[in-house]
Image 1 (cartoon, rainbow, N blue to C red):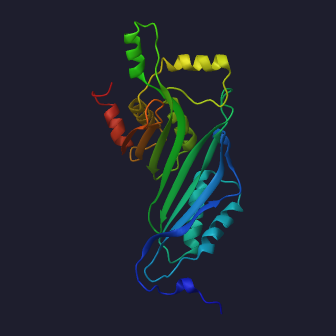
Image 2: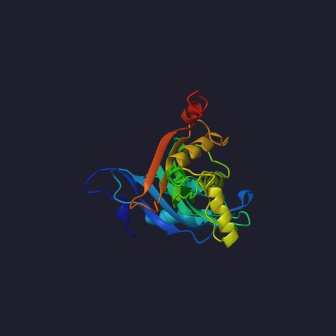
Image 3: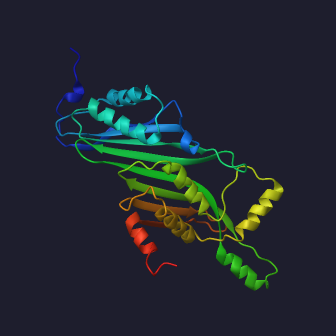
Length: 283
């Protein structure tokens, strides 16, 4: 009989909250036709809790959980995380909690200037045996910010003869913690971040297109703080998000004329943000 070393009692009887495999690449893409969104370069990590009387986990069972799910019909990204988690708990009866983390690229088929846009996503699904489950979605998207302060000061110093400012690439990060699936949520949040910047990023621009985009930027100047507040406001308008959703928004501007970056961040529940949006203090 083959010995099962994992089932032995450990030398020190501490329970562990998280043990598993990380960074396993899934050899397929998932296409969500409803939003023209493709998820590619997907990596999966699976972590389970380990009781005090169990020496180790059975790593092959975690891989088996993934393998079983991928044999089925293509899933959306939300169902994929949930079904891997459910399969993992079935295969590991000594564990009472599983965390499945999916990360990769979101490729969106967009307009003529942007035939393909690619952003990063992380979707984490936590499932407790005989208890509630929760999704944590993190979406990163890029854009550009243009400084309103330098613009206005240059106008003043040159009597409107030379109006200049500094611009820089920026990254927006939105993290949502929710009990419910958000249909097209990754696509919507990525678009929400991009539209809150001074300008979108473009893969290809001809000279006249580039000039026109920069002229538009001069009419859409924003501090990093402005971008965070605009993202927060737009999140309050998403009908697919309930009031109990926990939100984290962070924007980092990679400053072009300074040897540092500028960061702004806020956390709150959607209910709190909506209440503030409706108060008389908001303009």
